[in-house]
Length: 120
Image (cartoon, rainbow, N blue to C red):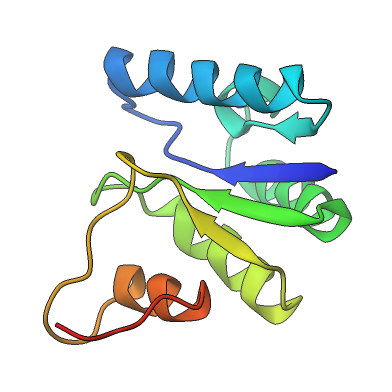
């Protein structure tokens, strides 16, 4: 299975980087092909256009999208929109994604999309 991990890239904390690398490695050990943006996408891009293009292609080719969100990342919204438009199944990554909270938010929408009950 091909898995694209939506995650922060700029200003990612060393703890998150280590944890997400470990998460990706575990998936790869089980035979999955994983695209982890801060590891697998060239980040040297003046405007971000090439990054967005690369992510759109890899999200399109993915069977599943796993999501880590730190509450600060902006790029995740682009990736999330691509996944949503392509109706990809999503999985919030435990420990790297906010819990359901009261009211409207993109993170609550992801839990709803994932099939989790949205009862707060």
